[in-house]
Length: 250
Ligand code: ADP
Ligand code: MG
Image 1 (cartoon, rainbow, N blue to C red):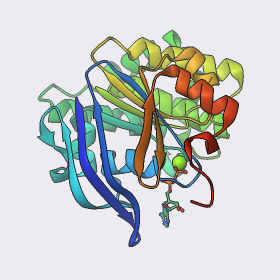
Image 2 (cartoon, rainbow, N blue to C red):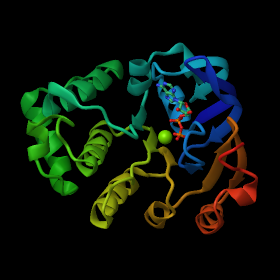
Image 3 (cartoon, rainbow, N blue to C red):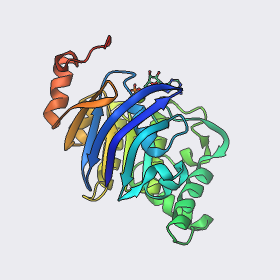
């Protein structure tokens, strides 16, 4: 599904990722871990086409298409999704309108007829009732005045609305209580049909109790320095990163 080769990314003239390689196949669940500030968010932002990132080298192929030639909205319409570590508040933009526009943009791009207002209401209410999400969230402006947990749940509502093929979740578990975490994990798991792939960033092994990874990667010095299975996350949780030669001073 995704093949990243020799990727180097600058943010404001500072090199954050250097010569990074990563392959994600259909249906796989990958976890990216690493110290604060190592570039985990930078990687998912670079894949989604975020304006912060300047790609100076390499390629990102998605289903054999070069993503670097597409802008962020084209990538989203192709089926790529990123939930923000810090979701942005957009006062003045109604959440229902926002979700409907995003879905219809994607439908049009994929040559499907857009949903009208009534069809969309039916579509979104099926989702909110299936996943126990309060419909009040639809009437509010996007993330405006939302608590940290509500913002994360709104990212999940976007995910469930768009049903992307390649899902990236940046610290979706941060700030969630255990009940909210279970709802988030259930939502994500319900989309994992063996074809969709998932790349998630987390600091905590707790999330991986609910969403089982195939691969766990450690990012350091702009590259993936170690790849393992679930047991690598357990090892990190127990011993920290120092055992892998990673420290805050490096
Ligand atoms: P992580 O997600 O691993 O904690 P990030 O990818 O967010 O790390 O950040 C990597 C580095 O890039 C950090 O040193 C961070 O301060 C810097 N950085 C990220 N975004 C910006 C920005 N918009 N302006 C300046 N520096 C940034
Ligand atoms: Mg981050």
